[in-house]
Amino acid sequence: MDDAPFGYKKLRVWQLARELVIEVHSMTMHKLPKFELYEEGSQIRRSIKSVRSNIVEGYGRRRYKQEYLRFLDFAYASLLETIDHLETLHETGSLADDELFSTLDDRLNQLSKSLFSFIRSVEQFHDTSRA
Image 1 (cartoon, rainbow, N blue to C red):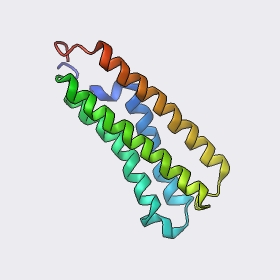
Image 2 (cartoon, rainbow, N blue to C red):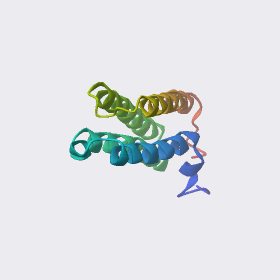
Image 3 (cartoon, one colour):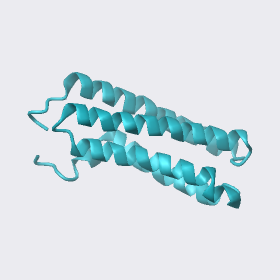
């Protein structure tokens, strides 16, 4: 494990998740009505942070392919939850900035595709003897 403990930072899916944690956090603090800080705003912050954290935790368990995949699946599920929260904020009018919604939605969907591809790659090619 020559790259432990920070090898996960080289993963493109982690880098995208990190960027989105920052963008979503900023959106909830600056673009939502105050009452949403502790409602949907809190939920979307937790779900996007869970994406990033589960990628890291999975990476930490990469010696065990099934554990790695389990945490990547958790990350993917949290990402879908984040997309749903974003849509809810927009549909209810709490996120009224259409351009910001569109940008975040596009970026979340980009991460979704990247993470899905990464999971498939781990399923097919992950060699636990080199983890």
